[in-house]
Image (cartoon, rainbow, N blue to C red; front, side, top):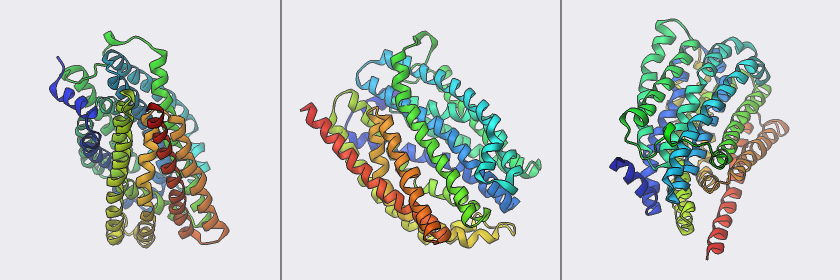
Length: 456
């Protein structure tokens, strides 16, 4: 028997697009905020070990972003494909696809772990880890070893979101974050493991998430989708539907990690490892600040995919425009709050004698970087439109255009060529985001209008 809550989630996803967007966004905002806390909590505890330790885990941040990117990419591919099948009223295909997601995630996790363990030290040295390499390796090796738990949990979230249920992933992530908060200082300080302790706490927390997700599928047995072996029949078409969004989305998120690595190297060239510590720490705060925008965009993928499958193209336009309106309001509010409380936020990461020297730079970074939030509000919503309709390559190109293209260009121009130093690099991010996000907005508007026109 299908659980009523699961039925309700599907009904909401296929119903009025504004209501569906809000209903799915709220749990997603909480979920992604909790997810953002992983690295933030590690940074807060590790900062007492000194600036070098903080910079060390900062150099691993791009690696962690790769793992999250792969999981989130598979999650997007899952949600897009599953919501489309549900919109087509093909539950049997959706059930089959849900197990495809799990198998694909496990295979990709194993390959990723092997490759990263082989090349981890070389990657960190290329990024400029240098004097912090021991800290970076201590943290990075353990994170990579437990990567299957990070990737699998994130991809399974896509199964729940594909059926319109964003609440249960939220519950699992809250539990994981609370556990991480509790055991982080125990492993770092009580057991005297330092940065290794922070990594172990993160891996254990990710493992616990998977236990709870699988519990809902196979023990409580009350989900709408049934990823059971009896429902599995390998399908090349289903695999393609998942990976044609999942792989490009993973690549665009990995590109974000590539950007972080390149940007860290740029900062090392301009100023030194302290500026990397400021950037990697400050970016964790930025990640939390932009979480509501990403949550709304993630919810938009399922709403658009379901309506795309049902050929309700007007609803796609309504959902896209509404998501931008509420995202802009949130972005402006978060931007202003961050500017007002920048010094207080910075103090959370510079409370010890070893990291006190970072306080002023971190305050300046937070005060300037938030200027790009309002443009991100329209860019995220517009990029996620293409994920929802299954055009993952387009979405990937837009992200690469933004990060590796405009943002790095402006950062080098202002920071190096025009010699504005670290401040110029910060403003390069702001200008690059502003230009590329507005291009993406125009692109999405034209595509949706074409869908509606062709359908009429």
